[in-house]
Length: 187
Image (cartoon, rainbow, N blue to C red; front, top):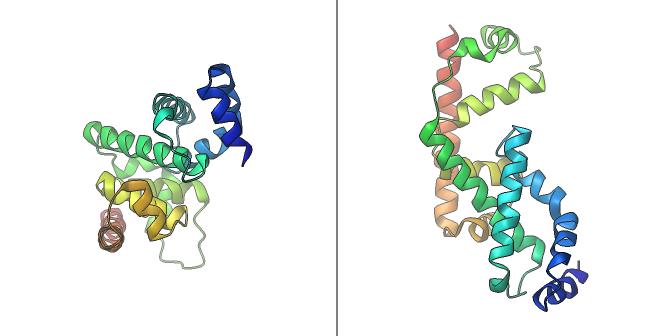
């Protein structure tokens, strides 16, 4: 969006009310990013507001070398990472019975034709993801769920390419062990 640069220039020259237009243009992208980390709609709204406030406060630091959308995505990813760190600190263990009967029935079956509905799969994945550190969770989410490249992940997280690759490999292994642990606990 080349007209983002023109809009940013007007905002920097005192037309601060026009920041609302930037929010309108980019809110769907911000919400989509945040929804990959947090499913609660109210939390996503709060996190989106936090991301836009941080962008507003740091607007003077935006140098225009990358598109505004990329810069805002990086801020949004950092807000999500901070949120995950906070959640990890106050996270309570969720027992398997709290997952619901559908998820438990699926875990008990050995029928490969049995299709787990998307909601139950999301619950199981979320439970397994809680076993990961916030940094591991971010890398897995960016790489596996958002389909981002290692280069994009390094830009968003500030980690080196080697660190991202190693973290992704270890996180996949931890995720696999967590899913196996859930499967064993259901027996």
